[in-house]
Length: 190
Image (tube, rainbow, N blue to C red; front, side):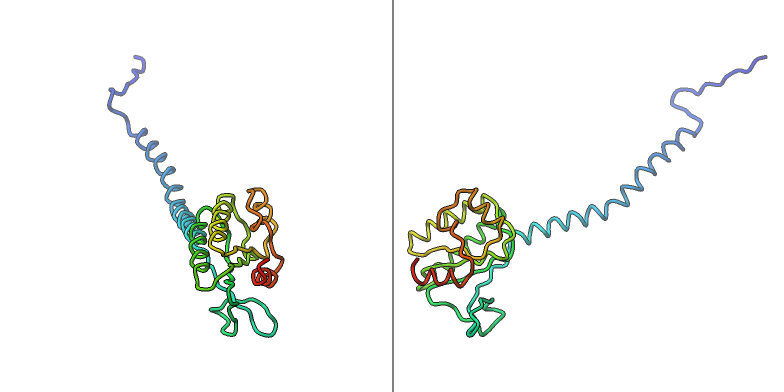
């Protein structure tokens, strides 16, 4: 008699298929379990970055007596405001995510009694995008209509390039090399 092959009945199997399926399932689950913490950390870091970039610190500066340097009023009690001129320093990039917030801060500063100019110290602004330039340019025009000038000072090269490329108004394209020169130009009405 020859060997008679036993064929499994459809729907039944000898268990080897279960072992193979379990092995594949385990291999798929292990990398996923190992990557989930990293995925959550990366997502959290991205959300924190977006939150912080949408809320840059904007400090008001005053001039120190003696050496004339401009420093944050809340950190240096000796710093003094300049009559008629508000000096602000934006500490971070200016982009679509935070331009309206910066605009509101500048508007509040410009609305002070006796304010004739707002100087923005841009030394700590590493970048600016085109949408932010358009918002700031519109703000400069609105402030000018109210008799208040918006004067940028101490830019970084990329900021100057984007201001020119985005076709900002003449007041924004004219970057003063120092805060002191921008304050002097504001005080002289230049």
